[in-house]
Each structure stands twice: as C-alpha cells, then as structure tokens.
Amino acid sequence: MKIERLLAIIVLLLNRRKVTAKELAEHFEVSIRTIYRDIATLNGAGIPVISSQGQAGGLAIPDGYKLSRQLLTARDLEAMLATLRGVNQALANRDLQRIIETLDSLLPKGDEPANVPVHRPLIIDITPWGPSVTPEQTIQTLQQAVDGALLLDFSYTDSSGQVSRRTVEPHSLVFKGYAWYVIAYCRLRRDFRLFRLSRISAPCLRGESFVRRDLGDIKRFLRFDCGPTLPVVLRFSQSVRAKVEEYLPGAELECEDNHHIIAHLELPDDPWLFSFILGFGADVEIIAPRAWRKRVQKILLDTKNLYET
Image 1 (tube, rainbow, N blue to C red):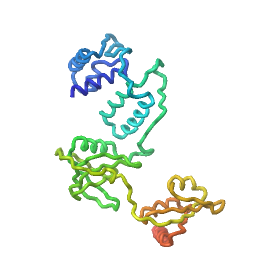
Image 2: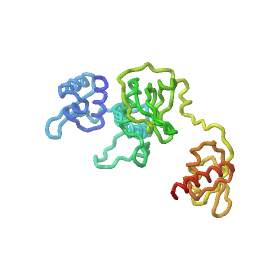
Image 3: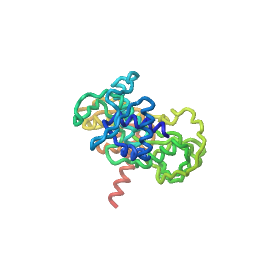
Image 4: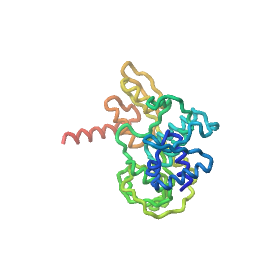
C-alpha cells in the first residue's frame, strides 16, 4: 500500500544520510517515477525531502527535522529494539524490519564519525548456538499462513515417531523455551493443537483461506502439565553440581561427602526423564524410587547387549 511505502521511505531517509531514487525503487520494487511521486507527496505533506546531484547525491531529510521522541526514553527504545532484532533474526520479517528502522530513527544520534562502532547495552538472540533445527523457510511459510489466515498442509512427526499428514488452520506462532511452535486447528483431530515446528516437514500453503476460530484461553497451550509427580532422590558427583543447579533448579541439594551431593526433588514418572538422567553418565545414581533403579538397569543392560552383538 502507498501509505506503508511512504512511511517506510521516511524511516529510511531518517536512518541514512542519503538514498538514491534508484535504491528506493529497487527496495520497494516500484519504478523510479513512482518514487519521485512519493517524494512529492511527502513534500506536500510538510516533510522536507531534499535532492542533491552528483556522485554523492541523493535524497535526504535535513538533519534538523526529527520525529518526536517524547513518548519513549532512549532506554525504552533500546530495550524494544533489542527484543525486535532478536526475534527478527529468526523471522526475517520485512514488516518487523520496518518497525525496527522506525524505532531506531527515534534514538538520539550523536556527532560521532560513521566508522565508530555502535554501543548496544542489551542484545537478545533467540537463534540456537549450532545449526537451526527449524529452517528459516518453514518459519516464514508458517508466518505467511498465520498472517493471511491460509490453510496449511504438512507432514508431522509426533513424540512417538508416528508420521501423519495434517491440514491445519494456523492461528499463532509461539516461541517457548528454546523452540518454535504454531497453535493451529487440526482438521484431522478436529481440535486445536500445539505443533512444534522442528517436527514439521514439507509445509505447503493451499491458497485457501479460513475463518479464524475462538482460541479461548491461550495460556492453556503454554502451560506444561507434567501430571502427577513422585519423590526422587539422586546422587551426583560434585563435578556436575553446576549442571544440576542449572537443569534441576527446584532440587534440594545436600553434600554427602567431598565427592558427592544428594538431590531431593519431585519429578513426573515420564520415560523422557530416563534419557535426561542417563545424560549425566557415571556422574549420577538413582537412589529412589527403587522402580526407577530397575528401569535404568534394564536400559543399561540393553545398551550393553547392543554393543556386544
């Protein structure tokens, strides 16, 4: 839309000293003639855009023209920018990028030379340390479906490894913990479901829109219901104490001797926990419950037999 392009042109001109009409035309995928018409519209609205000729010429807004910063302090803007930049590293959303540039234009600019590094007191990065388990294209396809209320087909692998083909009505993208999810109405299950994006493959927009349904309380999708818990006692080596405190923050820890600590905590009786506990290797021993000791013994015996065959 023209009004969005006009606003974006203002933001770009506020953030850069000079921009050529050709650069703006390529950025917005319009003709140079359209850009000059937009500039005339801005000038007519009282926003001064000046044009200079020559090798270093281009379009610019005079330094004395500034947008109002009265609503937000510089600290407010820096915090908002840090959050938006972090999110947009994963989304690569053009609308978000325009918002980032708009907010950045409101920050006070000093007289430092252009080659002086920008100081950012807060940096937020939600991308993983290693390769991303969710391709950027998948996130962008899901976002397009959410924004446009478009039906989406994909293959989904559940936690038990079962693969099924789903047609869904995507409502909301969610970043929770360390992973992306989508809240969507599943036409196969005839109910809302929370799908993890890393388990989605071959997403395809059907080009068919849907009418959004009432999600109800969205918090129900974001709560972790682990079910009933039972008291667990684990013995750890002192060498992994930092990891225990990081991954089991609710545990009550006591020193048994110079080499071991005892952890008392409540945990659900869930199979995935055994993989987590075994991840500590020989640095952990299950003291209670006894049934857990036997189950881990069987896992270790099966693993031993696997490597001996």
